[in-house]
Length: 225
Image 1 (tube, rainbow, N blue to C red):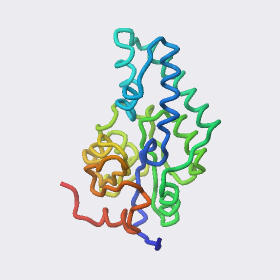
Image 2 (tube, rainbow, N blue to C red):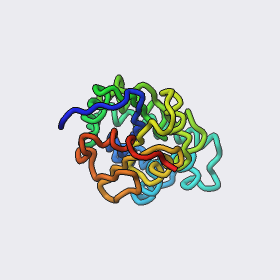
Image 3 (cartoon, rainbow, N blue to C red):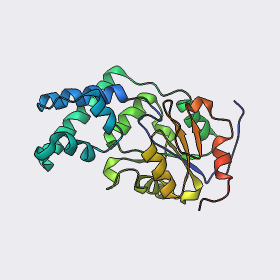
């Protein structure tokens, strides 16, 4: 793929799970085991319906009337600890084209940030497993925001930490709520999803399918209204 360059005061804000890496199986195994310990078996379908949401949005659905703050905190900590153990033991590989794009953008002078609903420790473990931690100038995780996607807070926070305005940022997402959050933030978006076409400014089934000028071309478009 040919080289390209763009204004160095531009950035790419990356979602993590499902965008840079496919961690679905590890999350499923961790939730299934921890909820079984709590005496609440969950199905794969229940898990998939909540995948990508914050823990404080997931657990009230599964714990019901017993979703006290203390219990939710304990269950969430146990699940995330097990998830990190599974990642550390089993390893991870990036989704097709993901690592290549991160490194290419870094080489071309783009700033990059992670904007995820995952806990910070999870993000750090995943980036370490992928060998990409040094490519990002900022990480915004669950602890840094009070409202999850489709609220734009996570992307606006990431842009602020990179000291850039929303129109200077391109969001990469795999879920409709993330694409909507990017729109509300006033940012261009690339939607990557192999199962469904997202309502992003540019939608692909794989990052490996992106044209060489994809990011620069999005920022060169007329301003969002």
